Image 1 (cartoon, one colour):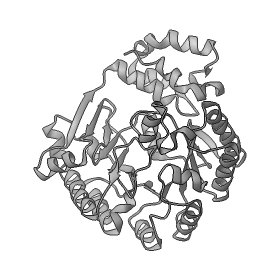
Image 2 (cartoon, one colour):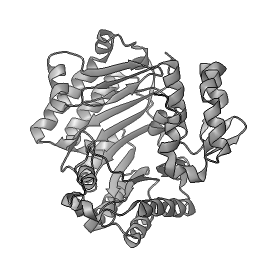
Image 3 (cartoon, helix red, strand yellow):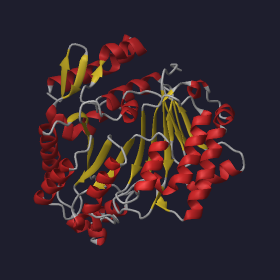
Image 4 (cartoon, helix red, strand yellow):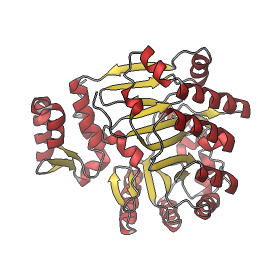
Length: 396
């Protein structure tokens, strides 16, 4: 295992006030008692990590690296409330070297954090908010089951600013039911008026793991599936948003992510740079450079393991050399700066890259990739078909 100089920690809180129709994550609506039990389980996992790792044959070295990023994801982590968040953060600081955390993110939905909670989060060291806005159109919000309004997005950003948060990210989704060119233009314009430091633009893709996706694939009408815009609209929406964001000073540093200078998500960059991170909570994933492992997805199974003193790990896989190089290509090429072949050669050796030389040359020749010295990145036309490009680097 490559000894990490810095570590990211991710905490999964799979509870929401309502389940969005487009959601394909393992989140659910939780009662207050569910949140209390889950908070206790998280604390148990955190405090017993070294022994859990040893029990599953995982090296514990990764746990000794200084933590520079923490990310509370979900779901809606703010549902844990001031007391629950303080309990989990206290456990983190007791278990990890977390005295010099540079970026501490928490996801929230508009309207889920009032001034007292925002102030409490600031005191806990949280310094970045990721706000699930999705759209600034009330009809579109209602269609997918969001409980907030467009005005609440603006109000939440304003309230967060008054509480002292200067690093705020907004998530937007292109391709929701009833979305039109006019409504999407308004969404992007209102997002820019809110003046966040970071904007994520995701493209809605049909998949059978969400209620909306399953209904659309079956050509049904529930969940407003018959009101989804076509693929041409989604392509236009992404390109138009990218142009507007660039004009406003937001640089694209990853396919879906745009930031003002210095406000790129340090934590998420770890995923695309193959840097180590430890995941905590139901369904959370971890990576140490050579191994990937994950916890049980079902909350009840995760909690029962911890209540009985058992490790909640469900899967553990050591990556072969070939798999590590594959990930270097299809994760690294997501970044605007692309990948550095010299860096890969130093890490795995020239022979490890040889099986992909022909693929690289063909994609460069066809105009899907651009090369400058040892650096390779997606060409502009390739961004919207990036999944097809990445597939070229997967051998099995």
